[in-house]
Image (cartoon, rainbow, N blue to C red; front, top):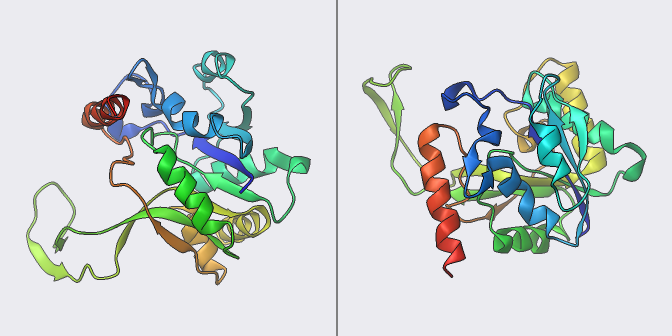
Length: 234
């Protein structure tokens, strides 16, 4: 599967509680985003990469300068859908409607090469595309309200429920159409799969590793570092 990568990286990481956005936090000798980029930079099937960054981002240029292959940039937006849409537009004449696009979180530094290979194998013959996801194993509770402490309102049936991850992989034409329709109706999908679902398509779920974590808080950095270190020892 030949593919292009779009990586939204314009978020400020309000929950991260640090002086830099989470994608630029130091991790295992480099930064979170560099680890997120690495599997694609090493993959000969990757035909190009675009990172969507904030207008006032002063950190990315120094990171881009030390990448092992060229990485394009696009203007990030207020929401994830805006950033991914901008990344697709930046690919412009380089892609056709039926080319594959992988969207991967800049704050997801632990994508394993095996999961990337599995995703390509599973989705190459699929007419829609899909995403890495993890079947839920924990008991799920619905709380009575928001906050760090509340009461249980209900226990939910976890059968058939998955935790969505990235990469999410779709054809350029269908993903662009899905995002443009969502934005035109002022809807903000939480991921690309939801936008594709809104136009009536059914993405495939590909079971991935549970350690493909997303760095959301500062505590997640320690876990990510431990995961990466454990892989070096293998």
